[in-house]
Length: 373
Length: 229
Image 1 (cartoon, each protein chain N blue to C red):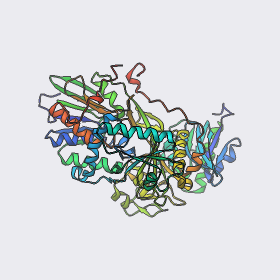
Image 2 (cartoon, chains in turn blue, purple):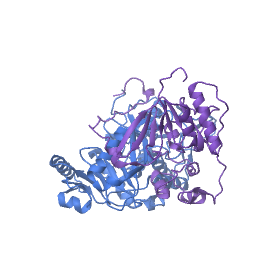
Image 3 (cartoon, rainbow over the protein chains, first blue to last red):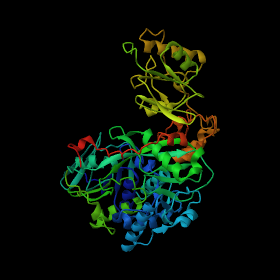
Image 4 (tube, rainbow over the protein chains, first blue to last red):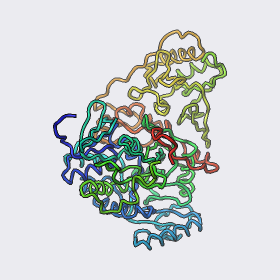
């Protein structure tokens, strides 16, 4: 710690999509921003993500953010200088039984009663207009036709380039070992040096609770290693991203013909090493569900499988808001569905930092809603 | 290992290294194509498929003698490029897991057989008649073909600048006889670690799904202290 004033107005801990988005919005508000990434940019959940851009089926607390983010995705090239591979393919959630369809109909009614019009109910025929290859047993579904998906790695790196073009600095292999607040400024300890700034943003994903602890704050959310499967290329048979209602599934076909299957089955992750293990018997259920919904997959092979380590809260909602300490904002724990909302959450963080409040509601994401444990 | 004669020994790969080791280890189970394909591994459990069936094979000692670096990666073996690091007995950084043959750069059949013999002797607890040294691959030039199956050059990979799983799949696709990036892997930069080591039929994997498992509970950072809610 020197007596020289710090050149940094903000230090963002975590070089995933959320850290980069926060850094981008902070830098565009004129702050000098340093991003510290423990390994490499997009090393975990960001790159391993299915990259769904989904407003469909969101928790009511997240709908406003998801709808705002969707608007940003439509103009993403204007924000980060690259279209991020965003395709407005639509997203569909399929009902396999009448009971599931009734559940989805109630959901659409609930969403409409809150003033949102983006979700629509699909009957048997309307479902087949969107998904001609869907299995005959599927009875309907819900959809947002303007949802879509992007390319995860391309998106992360487009955000990184935009962050750097906005004057921020991204440092990789810069693991944070400690946080101390003294004389109105944070001192962020790395292995070889200490860097200071008045504002710290904790965007460390699954490692977010660990960073919070460094600041003396206990935010007891957990983490999971969400598994993904990628099949061999098949002739085009499905355009929208498809989810199921009664079992975990998220499913899409890329332009290359490969089918990406994810949606919630978990392997195991290790925070110390940043590595994960697949759980083959659980991956088998992802394969089963995909095959049940789309019999056309019968001849496909699984060519790749992976998992991303992601922070997950008990209520499946992120942690976004001020820490108890001054000059600290938490934004992590996106619970497996943070990719789509990253452009909007970065703006929220920048608004909190510079105006003390955000335009979109952040109350449901209070970092201390679980108590101190 | 000599004092555990009932140890389950599994050898992956039917080339000269694997066959030689199997010949000296009568109790070992040899997993080799085309009869059976080893496509993924976790500690103590090798995942195979055969026809319509995906099944696990339990092991105490595993000898990797097939050019499938993903198997070593899946176990967390220390790697140099896409070769597991081995000691002079062929043991990787993971106890009980050995790597021999083309996987560690053996350039001739005789060398692969020699390595198979040394590993078998080590597992049997007898004095090995020699030492194993990995041969790192030579550095590649931009014009070099990384993937002989697909004719992908190093320059093409650099230009793509992409390492996410779907982008790799785009670039390399999947063809019969694909090398599964055994050579090109290291040159993809810090590529996302990808499994499985060999394609597995989706339907064979799906056939394992019986009664749905209870959702796996979230994990918690041990540093959070007492059991989190």
